[in-house]
Image (tube, rainbow, N blue to C red; front, side):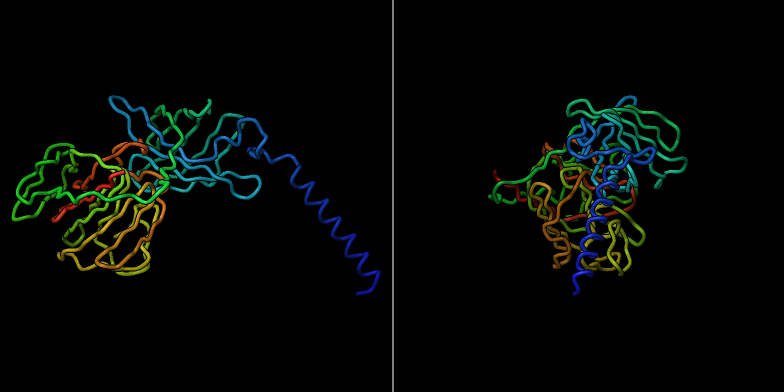
Length: 326
């Protein structure tokens, strides 16, 4: 390379670096906010939040994740009382205040609008649903649930005797029956929940559904392992063997409706492995937060096994849980 060319290259490079520095330091466009470390309060919104929405008579769980996208923008995901995790195209932050809106998913109506204020490690505010109702809400930082060492497994426990519903309770009017070693829900009704709660465990469970039906197994009552009549094809996050809305299975391993199928699940902290009909379809993947239909958002606490019975007929059998001893 000639001397002139080298000098020209050095000058062009310096000009490029100056232009980039001016771009980073330039005022943000209207509606956007700088969230870099050092800006008081604004970067603290980043992270995962376990939310309780204060509806009349009882609260319902929700979840929020806020993270960086490039230099200037905050994006995220939101889980409401039902449905799956929804993307947030931008979370707007101004000081210790934030707001965002997302389009409806399964519900009809307008956009869901959420606004909140961060005070210490508490995020709280109001949300206006797609149906126009306003609710207050409070969020706390979600725990990491990280395990420092591998669990020591205890003795397997048979959660379903095969003859009765001892150890279980329905969330409403009970339609579940035990007959011939099968836990049977003949039609849509109430979910069924274990009386006991668990932290980390291995779960063996067998299930069978008729054509067109839909159910699920909620791990700790908060993370739905999807059961639904699905067609073979590209795995997605709302079909059979997915962690609903978050993790798709790596491959199709399902059988036809009316046939017995098996989940072997290992849950330690947030990390989940699912062996479906003998194939490992989710291998030690992180569950970011609660899924729609969770019993609560208190992720740091143990929780039950919940069998979804409000979406259609479903059968279960041979439900065996091996708890972690530590």
